[in-house]
Length: 203
Image 1 (cartoon, rainbow, N blue to C red):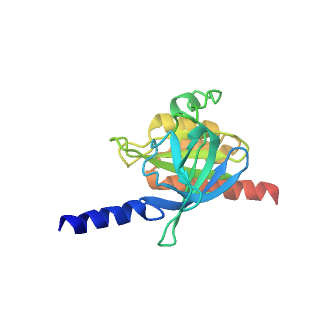
Image 2: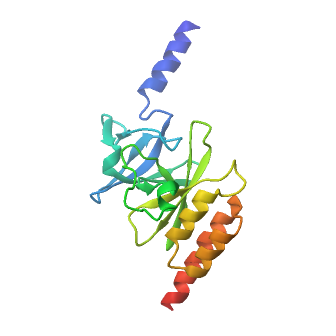
């Protein structure tokens, strides 16, 4: 019995890739694209470095988080998860109209892409009780803004003010956000409405 267990352990250990690794495309901030397998990132604040193997027989490499722009995990079930390393402004600063101090990317969160457009929506999942948080990024800024809800129900007042300030170039939508209760599920609707408005301006 012990021999069988040892053989199974050695088989897993010596297999080309660990079962915990995923097919990945790593896009670096310098534009380089690396097709590899890497450790899966499960939570927003996981990993200041990413472990990768370029081929089954190559040695592990570690890439610093601040060198990475985007990770694309290609799962066996056909789904794709896209994580971006983007600095973001806290809602408390954005609510005051201050967008000048984005958090550093090294210790920031991995932002998971939800919907891409002129206004792009991301979210994060955390290991602690913070749960899910949302982020918005306009195409003409190199940072996102964070927003929070009250335990999964309504966007809190500070975040409403932050979104309103960030989307002030769309006055009607900005005023609506500021003057109404915004349910969490309405965030995607806000993204859609902003993107439609931008499209109308460019027609």
